[in-house]
Length: 123
Image (tube, rainbow, N blue to C red; front, side, top):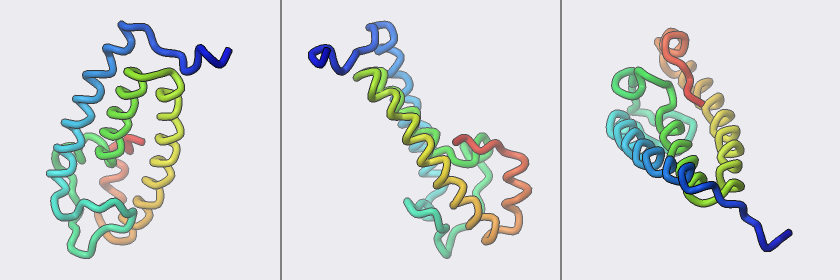
């Protein structure tokens, strides 16, 4: 029945969205500040960039993507089941983008391959 769309999560599930959003925002800010002037939306690293392995980058190789997924997952839980399901599409997109980034980072930084084996990917 079209009138019932979109299905909404039960209240106790929706509440779980709030800490996910707040945690994702916090993790994203930490990751962005740690990356500093090397932060770019593009998969090619900036010319002045150095390999960052500290802070959230010591936990996962792509913490900004993880942070974004937490925010969108939290929003999905607050809003609807279809919005939550759409997060899987975003995760797939960012997974492929991370692969492109990693090829560029491997070419650019001699220590990236060792870093990649030591720290899990995250997306």
